[in-house]
Length: 175
Image 1: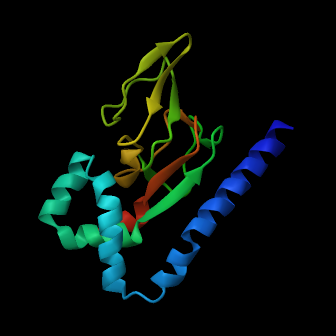
Image 2: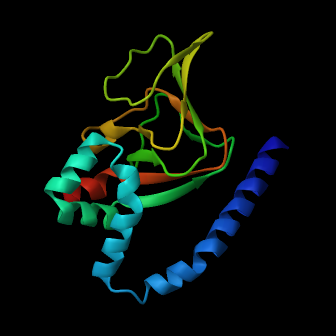
């Protein structure tokens, strides 16, 4: 029964977002590709520049970052309660994630796992696990951009949240 409610809630949320963005999709077909690239850059860079690499790379190679924003970034709408990935999972299509809006997620990692220095999360103890609240401005899974990756924890949406996903393959082709 709980799955049925979550499916219904997620479908309603997706339809609402689709209706909200529908005119934008139609309008985007009429806009030139260079202007679309500029729009994506203006929309996504304020979030991406929270990460030092993207902030510096944007200053050094703005044309490449415009390409990355246009071809490698997608928004993902996640409903509260959804599990984005599980510990030990190897993503078939790896992505780095940025929290785009005010929604929050919970990152849970087994206490016995070692801390990876590339994670941008403060870890807090909980009986048998470490967990972090992931919020706007935070990022996850940076290593997927540079190496083959298996998740070292699980990510669950606490609220409805919008994520920016950086597709590792598209990113690597652009840079």
